[in-house]
Image 1 (cartoon, rainbow, N blue to C red):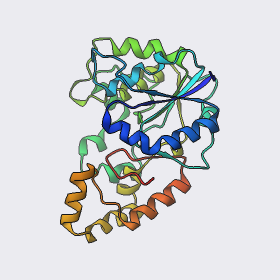
Image 2 (image 1 turned 180 degrees about the vertical axis):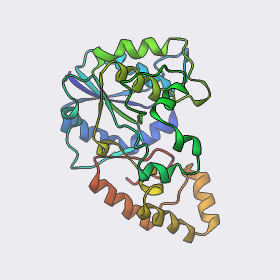
Image 3 (image 1 turned 90 degrees about the horizontal axis):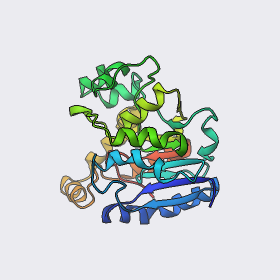
Image 4 (image 1 turned 90 degrees about the vertical axis):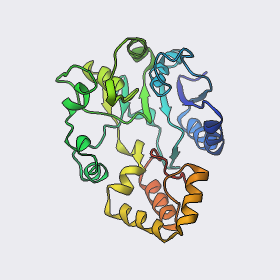
Length: 265
């Protein structure tokens, strides 16, 4: 057993099929990082005290024999030039993830149709989900990629998971408690955005991306509708989209397709 682990949640047939298409990517990266690759195929809490997404909070407690771990969502591809993320977590920090790019042009363009999100401050984000404000709070995170020291965060996360705290109507599952607990305890590090480049922001938040979105309109509507129904994706992968993804992969480390955008393998 190595002292590093990359962990994936592959629960259900849908995600097993997705994993099969990308397992070589995860395996190759594990080798590069000198890490074990562990696949979790059953819910970590079969009683479902909280929803499945929230069970990411229980991931660290499953890997206490490791010094450090990396969790990845399955809708991620990894560039061949990506360095080991394990070298990027400071020794005095226990948890790392990217901060949401609030108040940037990409963020504002992406969410301009939802005023509540645009106007939400860091304070609002946490207090609206029933967390008490703390001056150490830095911001909301994306939970698709996070790096952690199991022995230092496992109890903190699992205690929250099994608590009665309720985030209310704006439930952000694992993301808000992970950000809150590690930030108020000075355990958090904001990692390089290249380790979680989100296609959502690149497409909807940039002029280049908007031009790519326009190319889909050239595809006959009946073809698009058939594709959406068959794949559950929200966008038809045009040639322009495929070129765009290739370019972004060259610029990034991890490319994250959250939002049901088609993954280009």
